[in-house]
Image 1: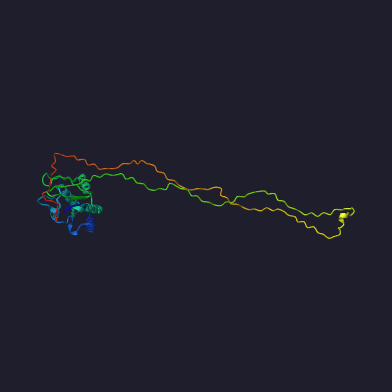
Image 2: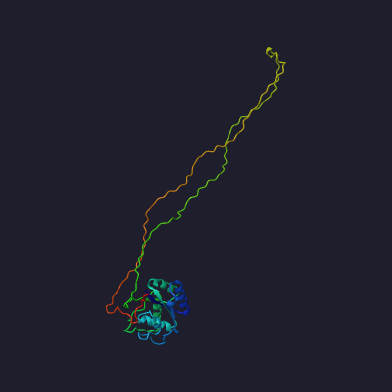
Length: 285
């Protein structure tokens, strides 16, 4: 099944660009039409009726309430351009996003501006009823079920809090070793020998023990000394140990989540089963 969606643009170039985006996205070009003051059925004065549908006569599946139709007709009269497209029901949301991204105008907001500047339209009491223009952004969706009833959906959205965890840098330490030199002063006592040769004058008789006094002989005496010898021994005197430990703790997360609530105000004086004598927007393939 398919429905007709409608969107208003400020210029024909914007509407043509939106048509091309629909073609490249999901909608066949034969199902997308652009309407302006040059379109068949356009009228400079007055609004369409159920008998004389005006510009809507060429849009076979666009069955909108009177006020919606007449708002679009006022937009055409003020130089706007209307785009209509037949879209499969399961692709309507995608088509809505495409037309919104293409720069379609918000008709509700624009009609409020027209009213503030003097445009005063009151929908007739007969025919399609007095339903206010509705839609998503600038887009109108004539999404009727069989029997002429219109269905619109308000999504109820609820946020859920998702708490996760990630690694973060808490700082660290860098340890490096390097070599330094420190002057050291020590004392050591050294012993040195010295050979002394002394001549002493002696005047005494030669004793019997000196009978061999006239033989040759020699005396060798060596002097020794001490000198400092420096050596170094390496010893481990300290250790620097680098390690890390992990601990876990419970952290309380306080935040808010949003939810859309729907409040229904029922007005018993208004007939909520209004329909259009144009027919149904659903088209079975």
